[in-house]
Image (cartoon, rainbow, N blue to C red; front, side, top):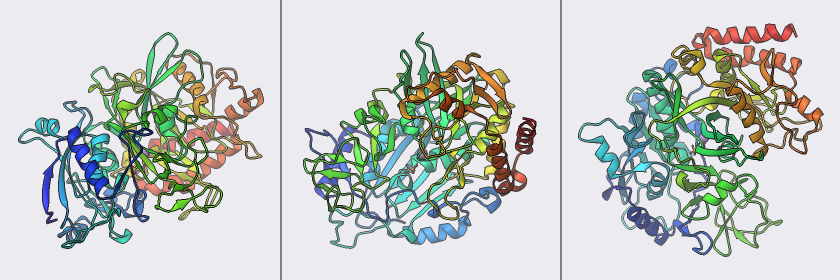
Length: 584
Ligand code: SAT
Ligand code: MN
């Protein structure tokens, strides 16, 4: 159908990676960075139309619209296939088709899944090498009749006889981009984009949208969560997963260096967790990926030293700025731009003179997890790590305290279902100041009806003994004072909150029972130097009026979206919360 000039099977070797990188550097698509500054690193600049995931071009093409549910773009699968087949017809002419056998999760783990991505983008192959396990070892595990998830990808820019890209990022125009999922067939078809989650099909497409459907059918969880371990001064270790909407610092938390003496955090993953009940009744998590595809702007030695150290070599940068001496630079890297730069569009850029940022706000780095100084020794354990706590969170300047703990499992599921961030600039259909709900941080990533997904979470709570389930918490690093200053310093100081979570999972840690759940006692969390006792009281207070407004917004705007698919127990949780608050 796609009629490539040549077909290459990817073996996942370093030689293959180096050969493709050299080929892309020779053609002008990749810019090798200065080997004295960033050995083994390359910079790519994408087309201006191809800089992020395209949610309005992302489809869940289930058999029925009801199956896709109220939060997904649904499209009839038969019609979509016809449209896309026309686009795919001859779309790889003049290019090489790469066949990438890849595995999400450690090869041989009983929770791992194999996919085969077919792509005409050598950039995708290189990124898949870092983000997944690619090649011969996967084919061997697949054997003659193993199961795999087919994932077809094309950048959608065939070349005519004698035509060349001339170093320009090839892709199709926005109205021809399709990121399509066929959940019943467990198949992915992507066309027209070469960027991130649109093109690296092992990530959001397979490990979240398709995997969430498989997980529902098989009784496990595919979640948009980081995984970390907290180690106390006595050397005891507990594992925590956390789901936050985008722009809440998931990667920073995953790699945090605690400010509290004697405490340590190690990284297992920064984006996706697959979780399954173990034979002992506890919930075990693996990170299906092998790398980090993180947002570069804002990443600095201050905000995330472990990421910065990981990026010293052997990394791919996309849409960052280039310095005169062949290094990368981005807004928030922690130092001034060293002289004139080349911006992400390839134009000259000078600090103070340019109107736009030098790097795109969604500029990315791709780097192997193994390069992170904080990576846990057990990060690839095929059995996964036992989870003690689940954190939900969002960007909420008011109402939601710094942290509170769920009363029980269903209350925790309720917390997950109301996750959201307050938006500061009006966007799409929302006014500035409203809360954009992003339940479980899965809004763009749940491959089926989200009401059924809530029920899947409720069901998990009935499948093991209560004492074995993780404790559930809601965190909010983003509280502000009435005059718009941060109440909490965030970043590394968030480790103080992780310490309280650790203690609560041990049945320790001082807490008060309130209408919204358990809240730390005023002296339970050691205060950072710039947080006063009064600040702490404000951070931990139960804002009765704020919560009653919150309940009203959930009851009238959020929950009705899910119709009769909304589990009854979540309404019970909402009613119970309201009753307790009214008695306060
Ligand atoms: O582009 S990705 O989907 O990998 C990252 C993101 O947008 O969350
Ligand atoms: Mn993500």
